Structures are given as C-alpha cells and as structure tokens.
Length: 603
Image (cartoon, rainbow, N blue to C red; front, side, top):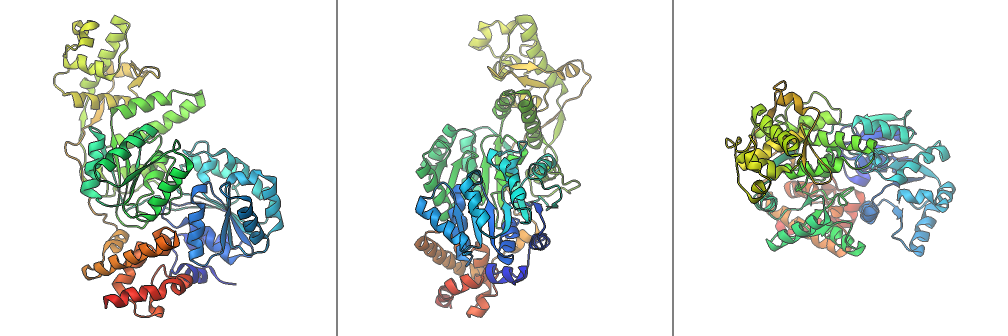
C-alpha cells in the first residue's frame, strides 16, 4: 500500500506536505474522524483526497458546489485520479455510468451533492460499495449561526449511524468558536480530533476605504492596482451587480455579472469564463465564489458591507490562493450602516439577535483604528497576534478623536425633532439642520427655528455623515426599519448627559495603496528572475492553448507557481522536469514532452 507521502509525490508532484496536512492525513488514514478548520488556499482538499487514495474503497465527498463538480473532477482526472460525481445536472445515462463505476470499484473519489443523501436510491447505492472515507466539504453549511446555512447538511449526521466504521473528515475555511461548536454538535464529531490551523492569510492586503463615488473608486482601484488581472467584485443586490458590470465593461474592463436572477446557462457560462480566461472580473452577489479553485484571483472588492465577518473572510479568502500578493478592498459608508441596521431588525427575536451580533462585529472591523488582521484573527478565536504591517490601518494608522460634542449635537437634534415636533427624519435632514441649510424641506417643517439649527458649522457635510455612521456603528443611534428614520437608543442618554465619552475614527483624506506583502512565503513566490519572465509568459501561452483545447481551466494543467519554477530552473529532461513542484507522474507523462519543446524553443 502506498504511503501518504508516496501519493503526494507521485500523484500531486509535491516533495513535502504543508504545515498541518500530514498529521490530519495520517489520522484519517488510520481510521479516525477529524474536523479541520483551515483557511482557503491552505490545502484542505489533500486532507481527504490522499486518505481516499491510500485506504481501500472509494472516498465519498459531500459538497454543495454542484456548479463546480465537473471542474473538480476534471482537475483530479488530469492527475490520473479516477473521480466522478452524482448531482442533478446529469441525465439518467450519465448517472448510471458513474454508479456502475462506483460499484465496480473503478472510482477513487465520488462527489455527491448533499441533497442526494435524501434519496433512498443513493443510500442503497453507497451500501453496495466499499467506502474508504466520508469527506464533508464546506462544513460550515451545517451551522445556522454561520453565514451560508444549507438545510440539507442537517441530514449528514446519518452517515456515522449507517457507516460507523468509515472515518469522516469535515472541513471548512471559516468558523468562529460558536460555529465550530455547532458543526461539532450537528455532525456528531465530539469524539473526533479537531485540527485548527491559523486563519492568517499573510499575502492578502486588507483595505477599507470611505465610500464617496463607489463606481469611480472601484474603477480607479482596478486601473491603478490590478490592470488586466482576475478578481471578484461583490454587491448586495442583483440590480447593483448588473449596473457595476455594465459600468466596468463600458470603461474597458472585461467584466460579467453573476447572480441568482440570471438563467442557469448564463451563470454557468460566466463562471466557466472566469475559470478559463485570464483577467476577467466577475461582479456578483454572494451566490458566487464558494469552492472556486482559481489560484490567480488577485483581488476581491466589496461595494456593499458584508453581513458578517465570517462572510467577509470567506469571500476575501478567494483572493491569492497561490500565495502571491492579493488585495481585499472595500468601499464602506453611511448608507451601508443604515441599510444593515434596518435589515437586522427584521425577522423573529432570535434572528434579530443573531443579525445584530454579526453586524456589530463587522462594523467594529470597519471602524477599528488598530490592525484589521489582528481583529479578524481574534474573531475566529486566534488570540494574541501581532500587528501585520500589511493592512491599511498598519500602513497608514488612522487617528481617533474626541467626538463627544459632535455626537451630542447629532443626538440632541434627533431628540428635539422627536420631543418638540413629534417627528422623525433620516440622516440627510438631520445633517442639513446641523449645517444650517435652509432647504425646502427644512423650511416646510419649520426646522430653522430649532435651537440646534446651524450648530454644526464646524464640520463639513461628509464629516457629519461620518459622525452619524460611527454613532450607528456604536449603537448610540438606531434606524427604524420602515423609513430609515434616526432614533435614540438606551445608550444615547449617557452621551447627552456628558457621562460617556465618544471616540471616533478620523477617515483618511488620501486612499492607502497596497504595499507588496512582506511575508517570506509571499516574497519567495513573487521573485521571478527577470531573465525568466519571457519564458514564463511563453509557458503560460502554451498552457492557455492546451487548456482551451481540452476544455478545462488553465490551472488544471499547471498552476502559475509550477510554471514559475519551470521557467526559473529550465529542466532539460523529463527526469529533471519531474522534480518540479506540481509535476506528478500523470502530468509528466501527459504534458512533459510539450513543456520541454517550449523550453527548447527558448534555448
């Protein structure tokens, strides 16, 4: 029987495991259950793929990523792994072929959508075969406290009841201590070994900038920092997705929309383009991205505030899977806070409480004056991290200032409108009163006679909006869910009475630009000798043509990191090429001669 290291070398073409992988793999190979929390790009897939190849039988992978199963299977088959999938996209003949391969022991890995386990025929099929391991991918989907709950995942506890001797490995890239506990409970993994890797992604530069003209800000970000590079832009609404994609395309950026309102064929076509083309930008709702294995996503941008830190971490984690520098950029403003505060008030009491906790944590991350990475890691239970030097607050530390008096002016205005006029208004009217603007609306309601009229001339319009945003973030102001009117909270009184100091964050006047990541790993991956760059580009061109010919994403052929190493060491024989990381036996046999031909042309 092959050892895990044998399989790593022969099939995947790597000399050694990443930190933490071997311990997990050895545990599962020995028959133990495992719960693995490891960041995106940390190498989770190998933690179940290698046990499936080492142990007798077929590894069964439960994954919600129906749209990506074909690509996952293609990538494994390119390595010489016998893989298949069963989901609702297949016709009867396709399913029957995969089922017969499973029963004949002709598969190493079988991917299943979770809803298939609700079908008795699937359970009967599995009972007839020999299963080596159950892998539950994207395990956070079982947690109602999480950001991506899928009801079908609640059925997965039956796997251990039906197959008590088959080891299970549940994996996720994101889980707070609360979500971790819920995954453990719902999947019955109390007796499993829990492996929690660092959630740090040192190659990602985190940056949150005040929102002014978000479309223009986004365009400048793409043109200045990521021209011609692949990335994802997230928006909350479908209409925003369509408008931003059209705006970018009109301004010379290759961009396509992706949301649940598009027909399945269009969504599939846009996802396929993103996986197969270099430099395409997808503008999407959160319906896009989970499980995307594209390694060269150079940025993830948010034009709307994510609903939770877990969602933000999961989405930004889709950048820089190859370890090279990438940017997580967000434009964030007052309307984001107003909208989310209103949304948090919807639903039953338990739902509202959950939403408020998620939102408070997300707003704290946006408004912090300390290292964003430290706050992220702390949220996921990883305490005591040092400031990273690779986020905006580290590279250009923001000032905090005593905003007690401005806060009192805002709260007093809201109070006087409610008490003296029995009225409630939104942010715009409150700020106009503070600035002493005699607008038609101010004059219509006689607000120019209020004692607070014009008391805020010491700050500008944008500054007052920043004050209100931060008061909402600190829950010193609230928003009524129906009309977006500002109202006081239980904590407002202490500020008005001068019993509570209010510290505010001063927004940066100039946007922070990303500096190259300073981690040793990122540096090593970035450094490509100047003389090797032309050869690297020729190898990429060959890879692109080969991928197009085979109808698979380029990274299925070879990752950029592998091509960089080939361009740097310039192997002259198949044996030498076989020593390059990412060149396993099957890829060497399949593509080795072609790679050597490209190298020979450069000699």
